[in-house]
Length: 250
Image (cartoon, rainbow, N blue to C red; front, top):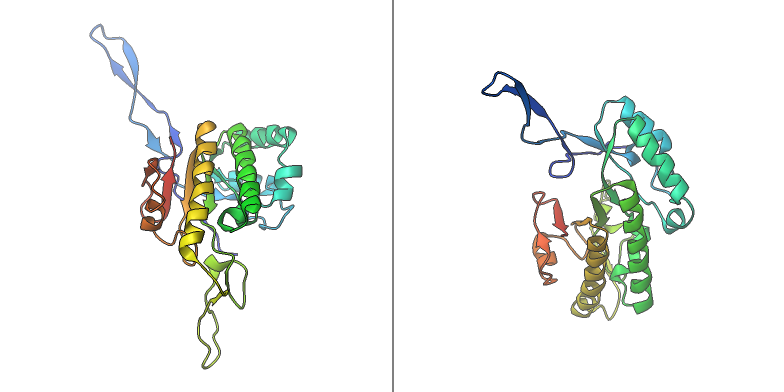
């Protein structure tokens, strides 16, 4: 397993104070500029992304290693339905506090919102509903941000994987060429119009909970680069974290 560590710059900050003397010789405490945490770890460095893979053990491991921040994740719709209850959230919050960990964001794995790029209206609606439920969970966990990997067209497929952002040829055979299969009748412009509407609804759901919404741009998805998202035309775009993230929110 390849470990993933993320800088939590602009997400989680510590408060520090400095002692100074006033004119009468008394010591006052004034705030110093906030300093960002240096690094955090995603919980799925220590558990799988399969449905039913829960983060309790990972939280203790990450805390014991001295990290200051952590990302938790909703692995599946089943986990949103059955695992992330109010009782679980209370227990996780207490565990984070014991380990002195701050939650920098709460991502939703692709299978939670995979219908956002579907041509089927009901599938898009269902994914927006799960996104909204995820935002409510994130709010209760104290996360400042929610995150998804940009979805990809259902009309695109690869021979060896269902997860197109990770599609690459690690050991090609002689004469074998990288390719993605495109279904007959694929209409990108029509799909783009269909995709942009639920993304705007997701943004509104995040804003309603006081959260920011970040999208990971990846190859083979609807958002391979920043200009792809800017084409959505939303007025709430803020480019924040270099070329890796597109962050939108209040």
